[in-house]
Length: 584
Image (cartoon, rainbow, N blue to C red; front, side):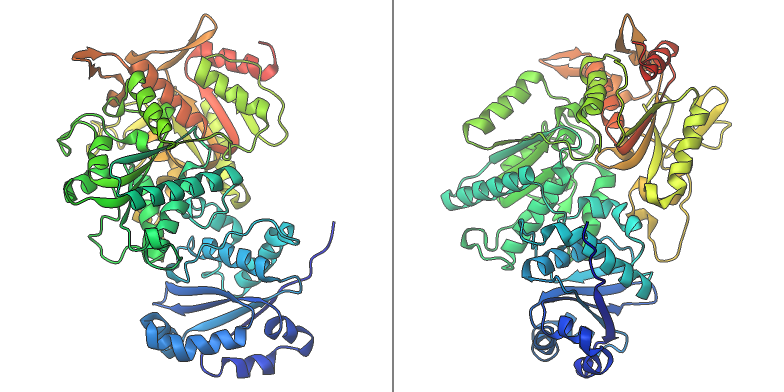
């Protein structure tokens, strides 16, 4: 294994005389890596005591590029004028003896991903997507970047937090600067080609359907796609067909919407507070008339769209209403994550939607599991429970910690230990919706709505007050990212669409084990959205089995590196413990 040299990282006051300082302070044996090699650089300035604006760039001639910024760009962009005139702005120049053009582009891309995930960064400039394919030193990117980040962290811990903290944030995981896998990249290129065709032919109401199970990278794909379309639209990338197109990103999930809005604000996509460029579907539908069509609408978690009217939505099907208001709709869909009767589709409707998209070449399926770091046997074990309602012997897996606990107390203590150690990342306890919870009300004679198992209890999510640490607006963070939520139990309504490093799941009494199979007991569920009947074909039908099974699917697929389980039903708990011993 080769040993990589340490990067060269120097910091200066950002001013017209920056390079006078550089040539004075950098030793001659390292100066060539700054002046003669490709470099990556970062300019930052304090907005206030707690927050920064940042520019990330790469160049083959950092001296010339800095002069251009100071003398030319200040005339064209107010942000550059602020950098140049501020007494607090700093410039960091990064060099390495292995830097080449492709490697610096990849490092720049990773810096964009990291910096846009830092709580203290309010705004970030130079928003290019620069994903590189394989090249001679591409296998060194991660190691070199970690060495660079360690040096940056040493210089300014607020602006450059510990790497594991960054990697654990919801913004980082949903960032458009994530490097796409081959399957995702092929899907994005196909979608952009289809959008180009629709724009060229003046087509309207085109549906591009992207299907994939939990953990196949749908959110990262949509984030990357939306961002690239925005860049093309704003002239950052050349594409005559897509220049000046209007793009919207919709998601019918409050926690996921927070993440997308933070990303959009930091990258300058949202310029007005009342903008609906990133919004919920109902707001978009209410704000846009069918006769005034937008060009492209990207819908993440499209399985959460409503298929019947509600108090705030008077239509019959949100997807149909969005299609009436757009020339192209790109919708990510996973029928196994539909959780509410208001989102339910009949099987023949889903098949027809996929068939129509496929006829036009507009159907894309993602198959590679990207979330769960487990071997195929472990993934198959989880899928057997969800898809076939069978419990089989738990396979051995050195990479994935799958464990059934004897008591909920033991499981909670184990997940708290994982959460304490930053190296393990965010870990939380979750449960099926089998205990009462009424939003915006308080229970009688109790402090909180609680999940109770025997003598053990913990509040349901979204009830405890946030830990008001300076510089962090907790209302902008997803549920799991807030420190106090280790003392709450998460539900599908707060955790859907997000990763946890370790997920501890309480399988409540609505899931039972009888005659060798899991069964779903709707009388034990408190999720009215799942157990109430739904009108289909002019008659009320019970769709609870499908929805309760989907609830289990969402919870059991959250853990990246580990899944802990405790079942309330004695027979299911017994079967799981036998499976752990290999006795089934």
